[in-house]
View (cartoon, rainbow, N blue to C red):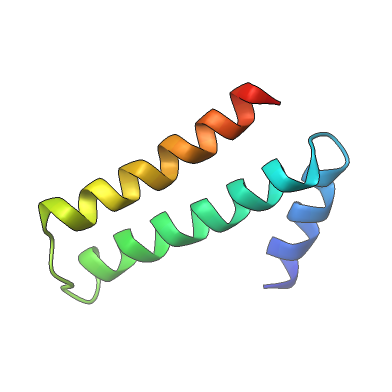
Length: 66
């Protein structure tokens, strides 16, 4: 957790805070989704996959727009 916060701080030195935080939380959400599927056997559905794709797409859009 501390390493993650430190890496967020480093990112904020190079890119806007809003973009850095969106990337940080997006990676966390997508990562938790993948870990849930691969390790805990969480349900895989089109809606859940679409939600993660939208999160990743939003993060990419924020980065390209900054």
